[in-house]
Length: 128
Figure 1 (cartoon, helix red, strand yellow):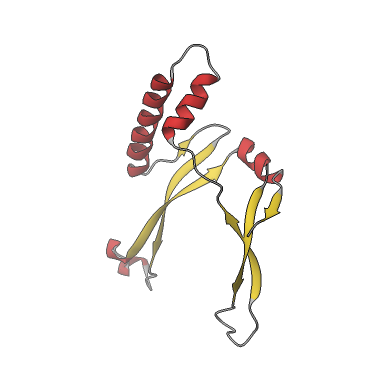
Figure 2: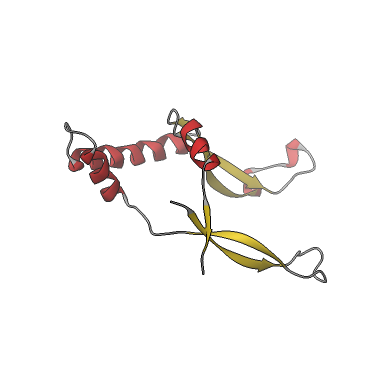
């Protein structure tokens, strides 16, 4: 298997007079939802049904949301970890900062050992 990519021309916003360069952009090749994942996990086990796995994955999502909303890092062993990150405007001093200066938030995923190894072994294929 390989990761498909397309080439996208992009200019340098700070130097618009320079010619555009071509950059690789990953092209997704379908998607997998929780129901399909639960069936695949259940097929690899003789003791649980896909409904059992789906129930656990749904609970996992619920508890992941709760712990992230409480400001906790959620670690999934070798899989990786999730954490809320913020972006904000700057203040001249600490006293001049207030929460309204926070402009946005995201959930950061940091891959663990297994996924980093997968990334290091990817193959790539140009597509149209």
